[in-house]
Length: 573
Image 1 (cartoon, helix red, strand yellow):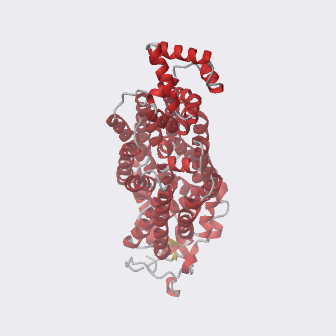
Image 2 (image 1 turned 180 degrees about the vertical axis):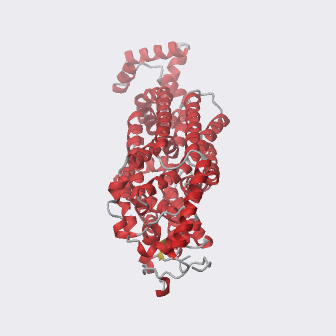
Image 3 (image 1 turned 90 degrees about the vertical axis):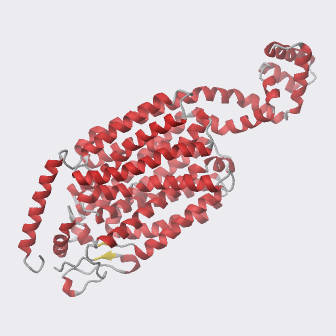
């Protein structure tokens, strides 16, 4: 075979000796493994697609308060929107196992175009909270399909020895997507026109969809169904491609993937990511309700997490490929992340904890998470390949389904347990607004016994109730009777609706402010438990612990490849 590694036509000639592949806007298949430059181009499209998908998914978190206000929904209802997205995403992820039959490039290209339409035309024009929920669930379903197809494409274009680096770049998707959300929203969103923020993400998706439509290609099934350890295997897999039957290779693929090492490791990483998904959806809300951070300050703090995570993903992937092992990185990253979450659970209960202390803790958590996740993704695809390289998309569908199911369950638990946050989000802003407008009057009203207030509300001319109220204000404020009566008369400046709102919800908000830190502390320890449960499942996954053993495996593999090429004869070799 010629040493020329340039990409050839999608439709090989008879001299190629390879079966014909599907071209056109539906086929998008390559008959030969691409050279480095086009391969990098295809991978760049995949990473760009992943970034824009997470931009679309996460943008609602940046404008959450405006969406809640627009549709008059509770914080709990808003959480359940994400739960609905998790459920539909899980079901769609399982259906995405069809990517092994329908093709990854098609699902990615047409899927991202569909999400763009939903974000430009659908969600911004929703006329009720139910319609918004349904449209977000539809968006999540498409996302569930694409985020199975994209790592499958990364696997196809990255031999095992470069897999962690490639997966490190792919896992930049959610991190860079989060950074895009915070950067765009912090510069263009000022508390109104949330619809335009949604549309911006849709425009980005449509632009990337056009790029994918023009440029994205995938390997033919006969090429991708084989195991590729190094780029030097390229000649061998092309020579063997004519003997691969894609349909036969996929027989029993679901049965092969429903194994403990596949399902168990997918569950383990989902538990490890509980803190991550909490941070994505609610960390800004958490710091706003518990520490009084503004939107910009909360997003600025979150950026310490995202930037560190991005660097850790890339560096861990490169070093893991250099040492040719994954498991030590997963263990190290998991332990570091667990230590960081434990520190956060302790310090987050202390109202005096500084911004930069939280930033340092976020650096620890995100560095550990990035190291563990980049190498886990590489190891997981290698674990799937251990069962059947042709069933990569099926294995990733299992992972996607498990992940989104866990996220849906976790968010449901969050909605049920974080009752204080729900009160602070739903009632806090209005309460604070009234308090800021009528501080003295509200302070006076809070000195009056609720029974006395009720009697005066029923009959403002009730002399006995009025005198009793004056006495309560006199005693509570430690003023004379004349000053107490003056303060009571000042209450007339407060609209009755506002006064009634404060009387009904003020105590609830005060109690929620006391309860919220304890409820969240319990949640952070739950995140810590998920991090610990991740560790034992590492032992089930494919790969060596020792770099020396990994190098020996590679030498044996290269010798087998040399022997197989020699056996094929000079024409193929």
